[in-house]
Every structure is written in structure tokens, then in C-alpha cells.
Image 1 (cartoon, rainbow, N blue to C red):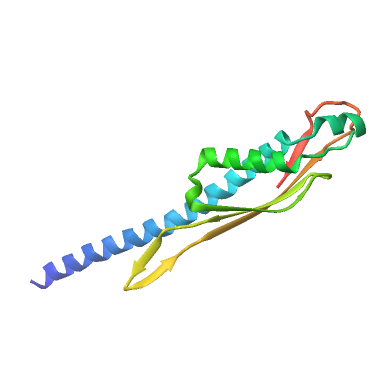
Image 2 (cartoon, rainbow, N blue to C red):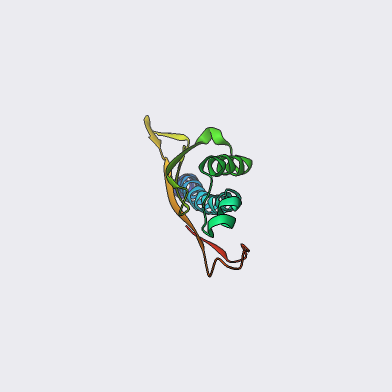
Length: 147
């Protein structure tokens, strides 16, 4: 009889450990995926928002602020559900091109012994778009983004 109780306790302990591992895995995987998504989307949005007329006249890079925000939100919404995310924009400079973006991920609320826990993940990224080399070439082959 004692051996069967030990077997039951081992099964219960195994189920408990699996549930804890699933909760932790969900939080950490979401953080990594969100970081790389924000990085790629901000880089692509900054390239989309380049003001080519200003570049032809002065040889310096400049982005359009409204076009950057629109492109970022469109690209970000294509990949995720915006109902669980809050997107904040800070310090969007047009010349030299720099943007600071903060994305807050709202996670589910977990109830453990009538104690509600919520894990909100905050990712902040600063992206600077720079032209590597001389501006005389007239092409954008050597653009780099440094998030």
C-alpha cells in the first residue's frame, strides 16, 4: 500500500513540474520572439520612411516621422494580435534618423492559491539608421541599422 502512495505522489509531482515549466517557457519564448520582431520591424520601417527628395538635395538621411509610425504599426500588426500589445514611441528624430520604441506584452493572469499573478513583458529598442560610406554614390546599398 505504501508503494502505491509513492507512485501517486510521483505522478502528481511530475504533472506539477510540467505545468510550471510550461508557464515559464511561455513567458521566456514570448520575450525573445518580441525582441527580434521589434528589431526587424523597426529597421524595415525606418528604411521605408526615408525621405528620398531630401537625400537627393542635401546628401543626408532623414525619415518621415508619420510614415515611420504608420509602417511600424502596419508591419507589427501583420505578425501579432494587437489586443495583447501596447506600442509606445519615444524620441523619433527625423534627422539624423533615430527612433525609440517600447512594446509591452500583456500576458494572461495566472491564479495560484487565490493569488493572481500577471507577467507583463516590456521590450525597449533604440534604432539608429546611418549611411555607411560616402553620400556621393547616390545608392542605398550601404545602409545599416543599429538597434
